[in-house]
Image 1 (spheres, rainbow, N blue to C red):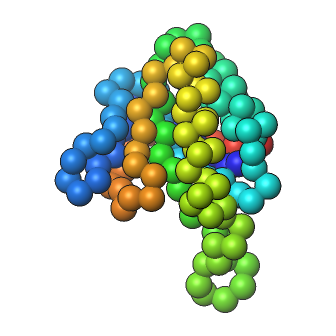
Image 2: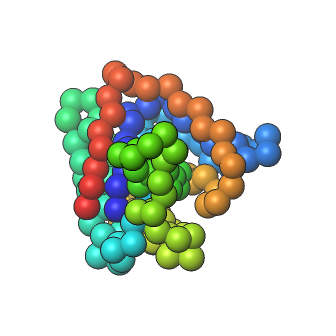
Length: 141
């Protein structure tokens, strides 16, 4: 499981012109990808890491501050550009495997008390964000 995490002052995601998820205060925008070998263990580890990671200002975390997260599924995080000019998506999990695991990460975050907004799995989404820093991390579990 892989995530690109940006510290933001606000972020939102729209589908067909409708806002489906947003955070309106300092928090984390999480672009989340799933690969074939991922399962519940990776989902639990990712949720823990996202919640407890000291990526906010003053080395705080969402767990310590209550800062929100906006989680957006993004299979393209497993795109490979090693050969040719066209990305290969063979490392990205199929939707029937990825969707439940993205949902599991979100649910595990909420079980930990996190405030979580989401995009819509499989939809063409427009994501807006205002980076804070900028501060962006790549997380693999």
